[in-house]
Length: 282
Ligand SMILES: [Zn+2]
Image (tube, rainbow, N blue to C red; front, side):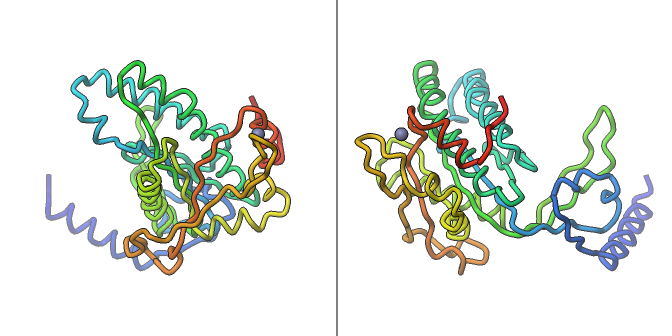
């Protein structure tokens, strides 16, 4: 191998690419899959993308379990179900990051799909996965859940995929995914502080405002169904005692909003479909 040639060739290519760097504003991040963009130094820019990030609350505890097979089974019960649940809500992009999963939603109704997806998985985890793992492996699986909204740049980097091999990966530039994953740590912080047996969904102020400003759905996302007892209450609380400095662009993270509620048994279908303003496909 001629190392000097290789290095010279890559150096020249890098310089050319950076000189020709450009951002193309796109209406959908799904364009990242177009091969046309793979070799060009063009990044795709999209505004108002919503990220849902869900992670196991204590994954180091799980990876420290002695039996490899037990760890593997927990991933099947948690991560596989997490991916499948989020997929039902039509994200534009979904990927596994460490032990967690992030899903990106775009379009006019993205905030409603994002919150419905998060509450659905949280409910599923607490009604089934958690108890199942406790009974089968003596481990309680809680999760950290966060949602944020931000602009994003994306590019597929690598070589053209073949039928047999994936040779490229999407690279995200910007704060969205990083900040959402940091918000998920605030979710753990609030859960521990309130000593609540349930998992907590934490959202940025930007995202919360989207819910509050949607006249069609705020009745279902901001206030409760009234169970039990028929009294409708505000579901979200505000929190501002977390470390703001860890966030990129921390001015936008002076406070967050959080929710402990799950879908209730009587109203889950009605509420989920009212939030999505459509029926989810079976
Ligand atoms: Zn209810």
